[in-house]
Amino acid sequence: MDLEQIILDAFENNLVYLLIAAIVVIAILKGVKFVPQSEQHVVERFGRLRSVLGPGPNFIVPFFDKVAHKISILERQLPTASQDAITRDNVLVQVDTSVFYRITEPEKTVYRIRDVDSAISTTVAGIVRAEIGKMDLDEVQANRSALITTIKATVEDAVDNWGIEVTRAEILDVNLDQATRNAMMQQLNAERARRAQVTEAEGSKRAVELSADAELYASEQTAKARRVLADAEAYATQVVATAINENGLEAAQYQIALKQVEAVGKMSAGDGNQTIVVPSETLAAFGDAFKLLKGRG
Image (cartoon, rainbow, N blue to C red):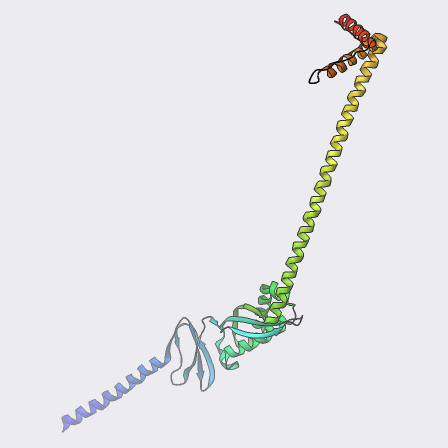
């Protein structure tokens, strides 16, 4: 009996130790938390915010603290949303948007907003309608990058209290109703026709200008040639006048004789049989011309 009692006492003592060891192990398991790199954990104590655990090993008070929320800090993309908007010039458009964001302060996201995605989508829709209402349709189409920048900045201000960072906002497409499309197509065709007419008119104008320039150039060249001929005749006259002044009547008779010889030569150069009647005065002039030529030779 004594041996049995000793064994029973030893078992009871070991059981206490085993229970203590088990409690220690459980406490360690509950007190040490390993957080993945892509997450942050929100810790509560008796229902109140205690701390936010970052990536890596963390320690909490077991049985008192608990991880109430595991929040992913990866960047997220909202589903593509479409909303109607009216431009300043009263054109109805349908805008497709997409927003990228990530949670930077999980404690705000957990305790200040229930459905983050729905809240951001609603906020973006309202901002898009407000911003497009300030612009004409042509401005929406031409200044899309500036519109995106404005929307992103406005959304960031609106969601700042939710612990969210908007990393990117995109306008994927701006769609028009069919009636507006048809009106724009008619306007585009009219603009193309106008440009074609302007181009044709400019071409005709240029052709007229070039033709006028060509005629002016031809007139200038003709006038220049006439001036050259007139200068040549004047020079020849001056030479003859100088010769007459220096040599008297003999030079004049010499020039007249040369002209007569040239005239007869042209008359006799014609085709066929020709009979040339030369007056006696002309023969006398030839004789005088030959004498003058002979004398000059």
